[in-house]
Image (cartoon, rainbow, N blue to C red; front, side, top):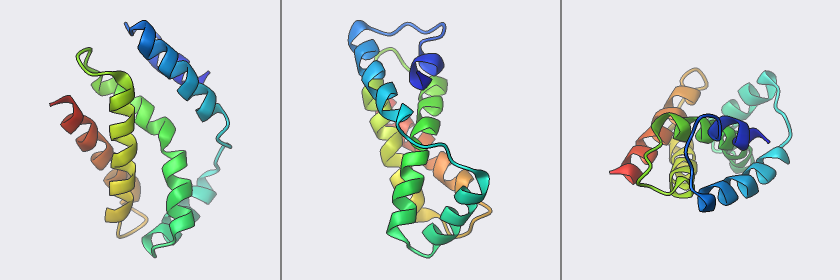
Length: 120
């Protein structure tokens, strides 16, 4: 399972967090793989305000949110709250993108910002 492999390695998580992550991992495993060409096409459409493209990108970025949470994890904050903050960050980032070249950077900056705000 993706989330289990990313977050459980050498990490201390509570039993409640482990249960949450197992359920979240099962959900993420259902997300179809994406080719780079599809992502570029989705960025182009998202910049133009296409809500379906934005929704698909938000789903694709859910796995990247997990990676960002691992980098920023604090034991004082429930891991599920950090993941949800990151997912909100994706949505906020999608609203800020103005071109395809910087889209990924803008989205991930907002993800990290949202996770950081949840930690503070």
